[in-house]
Length: 220
Ligand SMILES: [Zn+2]
Image: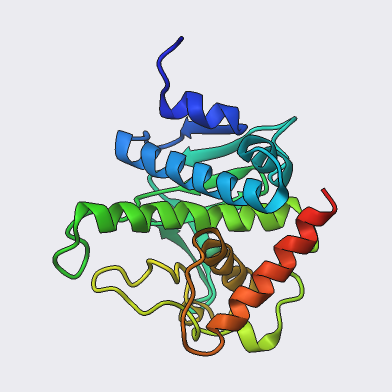
């Protein structure tokens, strides 16, 4: 049997890691494998399918790869400054089958000490958040009816020192108005790991995602 590599594992799910203007390193590739497998296992359990079948169904990767491309940076429109700027960390879901990933969270972090394990978890969660965007893009209607009471920076797990973006990858404060698409991507992340804030509306977030995913998978 051929040796398993991140690329060979991801290929089973219809996911392609591609070098763009940057190259994948082993840690980031493993964070991506972990993210994809965790999403697939959760979806499989919800759907009553194998993890691979659930992922390929949910992300529509039976006929087309979902490409995750490593980039040094990418251009994006900053709504606060109203200018095109260059992002050098995090990711961008370009469409249902293309995600850009730049620099993922590193040990030591921006505010001092951050362990290897915490950095890996933030990186993994970053990928899962992008997969949440790709899942919504692949399935028109998903994430379109989030109640207004959930479009906020409340009801997420508490900040972890040096890991602010652990469970709230894209806070409302980054944009002019809070984006429901970003709330959805972070609730997708919460759903995959069953991790929610205990303050309001944390329990409502869990309820929304449980209902939404049950309904989604009941028809597939
Ligand atoms: Zn996002």
